[in-house]
Image (cartoon, rainbow, N blue to C red):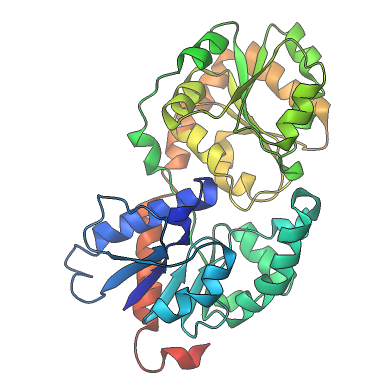
Length: 364
């Protein structure tokens, strides 16, 4: 029996929640195929406020009372059977046959990006959760190495199960009226903003004037947050446009019409936006740090995340060398195909099948 921790169904969709939704969707398809059909009953247990994806057919769905962080510890363990799979960093400490996906150790690499309350919760739950889980999954070789270096778990206990790209095929590129107006002003560099300091969007704002002199705008998308509010409270350069939250269809159109997608993070567990840009044929300039070279391969340009000059030089290259831009547009989709939700879902089901049986709990 497989029980899936469905707390992500009650949360706003960011990269981690998208990972869980896409993995579960592909698992549901696989569980309807001959290899797994009938061999692995599965259910997803979720808080009361959750909504199930109507396309799921093979995975049963159970709502329980409660919600929030304590739901993982106080409710979920008593509703679980067999192997428990938690896909979004956290899960119950008391589960005996538990696979948990820990996407990154950014809270240790960049603690200033997180609230004091979250840091305290992680210190209490995170390390013992990684030690007690029967298997730990993560999304890149870089994250696997960090889990080991920070002493969270042994290397032999970790499986690398990355993000995928197929979800972008469902997007239908079209811009909202506001986003379309902003995108039509001038050619632009596209950025996904975040309040987390390790996302490092400030480095692009520091060269906004020079980018303006190139005849380019900077379009920043992202839901309203403290960092964006602080930036907008000060006089922003005229060529910087804050789009706020944008839909997936907006994202697709922005990726496809941008001069490039700039991803200046200081650290990433994987870097899903860069993969999405590659899949949609958008030239990517990424940090030469953490997991990003692993994800982007030779299909992107790289810049030092601490050097504004590096970022300006790479933007200039793309603007002045159309053959280079075209080469990156051609390479991107091929690189993205190396990462598949379907393949990753199958890796999880293989892990679960290996853990089934009376001796599974003894492997913890």
